[in-house]
Amino acid sequence: MKVVIVGGVAGGATFATRLRRLNSTAQIIMLEATGYVSFANCGLPYYCGDYIKDKNLLTLMTPEKFKKDFNIDARVNTKALKIDSINKIITIKDLINNQEYQESYDKLVLSTGATPFLPNIEGLKNNKKVFVVKSLEDAEAIKTYIINEKPKSVAVIGGGFIGIEMAENTVHQKINTHLIESSDQVLAMLDKEFSNAAKQELLSNGVKLHLNSTLTSITNNQNNLTLTLKNLNNQENTLDVDFIIAAIGVKPNTELAETAGIKLGITKGILVNDYLETSQKDIYAIGDAIEVTDKITKEKTLIPLASPANKQARLLATNFVSQNPKSYQGTLGTSILKVFNQTFAKTGASEKTLKR
Image 1 (cartoon, rainbow, N blue to C red):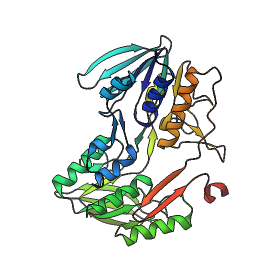
Image 2 (tube, rainbow, N blue to C red; image 1 turned 30 degrees about the vertical axis):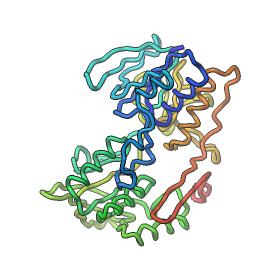
Image 3 (spheres, rainbow, N blue to C red; image 1 turned 60 degrees about the horizontal axis):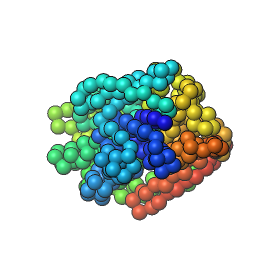
């Protein structure tokens, strides 16, 4: 059995190692577009904030270690371009040598993840002073900028998990930190009582909150950026900062699947059945890219978290070798977050969700 996996990190790397433990003879190839096939992505904000000083503490496995310990062929800086599902061939590009080649497969696993969402706001895209936090390369870019440019101020766009963790870490770097959120609360997944406690924790640690504020444009000045914000009454005000960290959310990476004729769900995530099979034979999908069922509400949703990706990966690998495959039972979206000196955790549906 020849198995090709597109994407590493939580989903792909877990699937690959679990399958190897269960099957000693399968040929396993893992393709990762970034330079790191397995890293602790939940630690990225703390690397930016210098809590974690050594990058090697975040890189769990290297391609060499995958080969030595598991006989897995892990290829970094390698992008999957096209799937021929009829002939079971995948076209691949080596991003270092700029060369294309093909691999056949018996089974294909898509763990393509999600990409940070950047809205179509003037001055936001292709701006050297605007950063996202998804890969280890992203974190390195932020850390390098802070060390070299010694910025005095930052605007973090988005009051979710990554936005709040980045705000804490820029404060830790003694950077004047503004947090901009379009809704009336930070951590929209929490009920107001808990969100208010998080808000107070942020304020008491010096984060300047701009709630009910939408970013409408960014102007590049000689030394800094001017952000134009609009409130609920359509009143505008401006804010000058040295750089921006965009943590607005993520969207599933589905382009590879779509061009192969694989169906998407109502959330625009890859559609899978209870056994994580896509609409194309012998092609499976796991992780941030797939549409899942909320275990409480039974609604279709996207839950881009590492824990569900790990669980899906282990289940799928087990099903590859099992005579009695088990179904995936849905996702709870359990999450836990440090906000300075407080810890916030959630599982299941919020009051807001249940009322809706």
